[in-house]
Image (cartoon, rainbow over all chains, first blue to last red; front, side):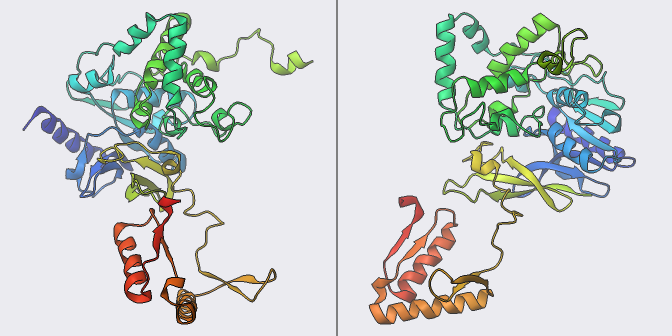
Length: 277
Length: 139
């Protein structure tokens, strides 16, 4: 058995035990037709539980918890799922005290592929959590980030103009994003985004999305993997996150307590109604 | 309580991207791309992402409708599948008998499976006896 097989066996054993007291565990299930997220419950055959590929598990558990607010769920979470869950908890999209985190560390190869700095889930924020797998070293950032940082302003603009020109406006980057959940989305507001225009207005469409990612993007890369135009979206969000980190000292997904910087109001800042008066 | 994903093919174009319908307690709550499919590879266009929205849409036709009578006052009335198919057979036979087989044409669709498209050309050629078979992808 490879290390990965051993890990999978350990996770299956743990899920079997956890189902003794949980209402269900959200994980991936492999069947004859493919692999997809599934809510395992007591009595289910756990030999179909697998750990790949990556799906937006945090986003799914949010739907499950909203439908069944009293249920106790487990979730198999990679490091990025766990970080997403933290940001979602801060925005009342999940209930962390009713969630049992079964963390799985990504391999060094997976970290490399995602340019992931923190490939093992941090259990500290979670009241109930376990970690499986050996934590790997973080991988260096996408080399495109440093290439970009060396570009002139003119070159940067040209770079994104070329990238955004490919956009099919599928909204997949938003639909798959665990931290995108607004009921009314600025990207569907004709005030900001002219309907029926392809490629979408440059740079408004992508910069609205990028700005809304500041202080909440957990670098899970789901947007980039879902993009049919292969736009390097995480490079853009990574650059913004660097600014948020440097200017506001905020790291998305790190802990449940620190309020997200763009979600707090400053005590002395006037509210919009006061300005109107 | 139940959450599972049902694999299906996007109904919108001939590319045939694979997607999962997310089913929570018997209700479709959304779409996920199939990350393992060799063609779509976890990617979808806007139609695929919204492929589930028509399933329970109030405007969706769930039964055949037949327009009875002539002119602007003619109204669509609900019919049974047998009733609708009988009417289609009767009118197609009538047109064919009066004007010949080539007065009839068949429009297939890129949204259908290969097997369904095979059947429609079989119906056109073997039953109605015309080679007038075309499809929406040419439009």
